[in-house]
Image 1: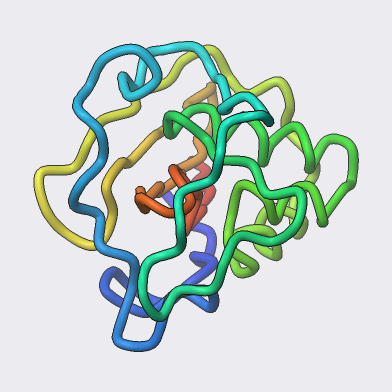
Image 2 (image 1 turned 180 degrees about the vertical axis):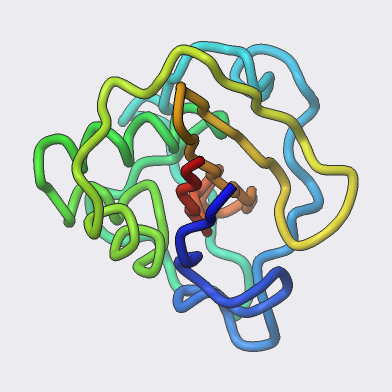
Length: 160
């Protein structure tokens, strides 16, 4: 399979919106269950829920930020924003490098129904979600932060 260039450097590299000292730690996603289960339907916290304070050294969420309660919710939001050609909205679900990468390709929304989204046992990412279709697929890497919830930190498309 041929691989498209990734949006960020390899695993462990700091993403553009990571705090000084390295990438967001993938540890600490909530236990699987409603909202935390990768198979749960996309949902975001209600706007009336008070946001958690940012971690020391992290920048606070931008105005209009959305706290995504599961990895699929963040991925779906990014894909929907791409289909509407709305970079600002896409930045609510992903870092700048991921948004730049996704906007370099034609929109693919709705996402393919064939998908596999799993929590990673260790490494630079909390979740790896793969959406596949005949001829290729889309890799989304998602991290969790107590301050911001789930956020797409890397995207890579592949083709046969």
